[in-house]
Length: 520
Image (cartoon, rainbow, N blue to C red):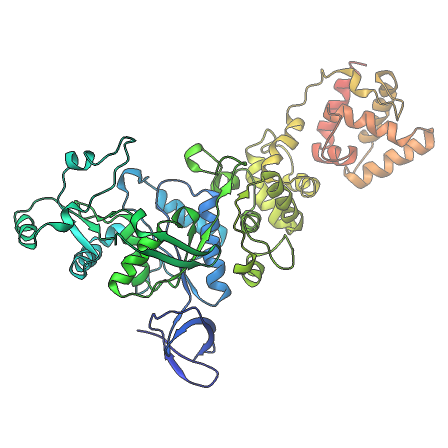
């Protein structure tokens, strides 16, 4: 049932599916407001869709398309749909639909309608809509927008030119009606082809690229319904978008030149044509697009590498769109608030993982400490220190020192990979004037100090070592350098000497210090 709305003059409107360029803000009886497309008193709420093919992991370009469709819908108080386009059974990957659901959920892009949460426009999986496509394909034939084609493989191959390019010659369009009926009745295999005019142009206005016009003579009579009854994308996307009330189609620029032939289908049926927003590609570099075909990182890869979903979403939103306020770090709610078509670029964007790492680091540093600990735990568990030390103590050191959670295993591994036979040159430090010889009395003192501590923690270490250095005229920097080297066998560590000692614990510190004294 269509929902009832009123405008500011208390004029009533029903959600019917008629769309036009002009927007109006309406309010329903529950106080909800939204932007609608209005024509002749009939209105429809803004509705967008994401229609992926289940062919594997979702790469960054596909996720951006879903994100922009979601942002646009929510910006205008509209609805965002998920539709699964699985008619290409040769490329179908088992489990890919589940990956799509999981990716969108993790990214916070929650559809208002989907196969998992159906509305009144289902089914939302194309393979389950076969009868619908057949009905409309045969109707299109009756309307003159399509025709039955009985050409076999040999004849189609004979149409190829010197370069192997084939363009159908409308042969079956000119078959007598009686012959078509006879062959259908005989059960001959057929496809249904679009009947594209041989003259004139098909044009439309794209929200990003402006006026797009294509000569009809350059378009081919593509197959709409295959011999097995399955539709091609060329047909299914039009039927589905119409029946599902899609007002704005948001997709990649690879469909810019083919959209005119889709519009001819809309016109043949007498349907309203949606508004289009075509998005330039995301590039790996100046020459090559990001593509899962070439093994480029997908959303789940980045999650596994320790990127936060909100950081990934934030970054990809900026690949082809610039907010008016030039702010880079935005929550999903802020992205919705700031998103505008005016900020979209016509140019391709270069995916810069280093920039995403930097942004991810900003998100990590702003996490509540408890959440950082929870997110970091799996990375500690798969590191060399698994189960050996207090993870929260690591987290206190690392939260401001990592840009991805995936850095954690490498940053903590040295504590578990400690070898007492490291090079004694590590004790050498020009600034502190230390070496292996000066280290020995410092380590001897360290053992005595630690043995005498009833409470072993950062504060007690800091106080006792500081007092010792002051009483004995020892430069504190020199003492801590030798102390830390003996405990870690590393010139650089994610924390200072006190933090490293606190993580290792009293017994392990004494064990490592004594192992070094045997060498000096």
